[in-house]
Image 1 (cartoon, rainbow, N blue to C red):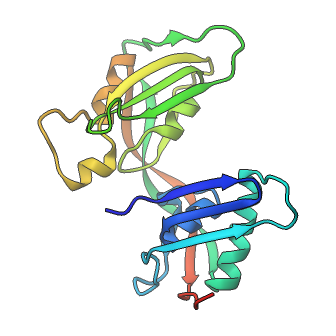
Image 2 (image 1 turned 180 degrees about the horizontal axis):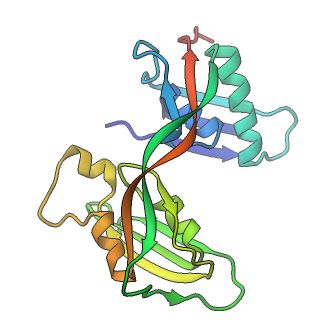
Length: 212
């Protein structure tokens, strides 16, 4: 399995083992459920290594790199797309009948988060948030569908949970797996299956780029 790697060093940005699909997600700061292909024949899943250097010699920001990537996709991949509203399967994050069981955050420190396995070989990930809103938790949850914050809770909280990322559950299941749907219950929260209107970027045309 090839793992996509992104890095910025000064004016240079690199995308290693990125598919056009991943490049589009990065360029427009989207998630997988926010992009769709108009045709199954589009070359969205070939791997590329891309290195680009911004004009001048100053360090660039992530947002500036995304604008560069949008131009590259239009110029080299001939990307064409449109937006449309679609009915999408989602999870609503809601408060359980017993009420929330969340630890309040402390102080005015900005939200801090760490997500990943405790050890490289671990199957389950630790999702750790310090002084964060539930919107940050929702953004980070990896499930088979998007998650919308419907709790009405606006405070900041310290949250640590362990769960098996959805991309691992799609490949196989093991006895020690913990679904996000189960992991979230310890905080007096639940994920409720629903339908919601959502704007989706639909890829109409994409070419394989020629050699440099």
